[in-house]
Length: 104
Length: 306
Image (cartoon, rainbow over all chains, first blue to last red; front, side, top):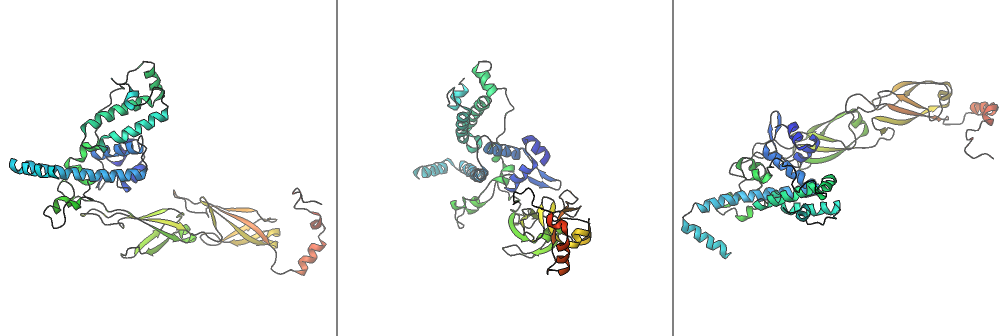
């Protein structure tokens, strides 16, 4: 969807959207015709609305929250890849790894 | 079913403020996006949100208290939380950040590329960050517009900056693509230049209008005539009517600042009578012989009479 449709979905002003993008809370794809938003961007924008609205988080707080959240998802995806790699090993190797992490 | 009061952990007598603060506390703890791996958080968050939606609305709360509705509101379309997308390849990469955990593996570790790689394997295009600068410009350059060459702190070639006519104090000019470079072939960010306009010794701004004072001689004041008056884009001829007193204001239409939507503001010129630099015996002799001049009291009504 384009920026106008996106703003309509969220009931926000384009001005607000610009700030979110400038803050890099949102990073929509850029096409020749302008920004293109996906469902993921919409879900992310709803999270920003939850934070700034009912949860009473201020802009600086949102900035911190989004950065940490992005790190967490980065970490989770690396961890998921790592887990898959471990699961694809021989059962014996998996057991060795497990006993090693349990000792930590 | 638990009552919405129990869900939020407040009493039936709770004020709206109590309800809001109870909700905030729980929401911060339970929001699914703040608990990406906890499946239960979504159900608890939903229950808390529904309870808050009901109790924060005085009308609905009243209906519930009177037993006219139960604790479930109308069923709304299931919401997709950001976490549902965050771990699904394609989108994730744009937002996922690998900053902060490259320390899991040093550069010479065989896993180093695994931990410093961005997102599900493909390198993301990422637009460069915007950079903020500020600069001060003269009043007339701002009013009439100008072209100037600037060099941004941190090096790089000098840039041409066009100051559009009617630039105001506090306005931000954008140099597209002159911010930080993009990542992996993505466009650079913008340079945003915050403009400070130095005040002018003569011209004062009032919205789109410009106000200033212009001195006139005694004979121009008494007899009127054509005078040259400065404006922000050069002097113009202005006719002043006979008997123009100090404080009389002339409006010069369109001689104010450029308006952002097109057109111009006006200039308001306030006249100020100035006596000759050196005393003139002929003028003194005339005023001496001018009977009315001695009886008139311009301070009448100011409480200064003897």
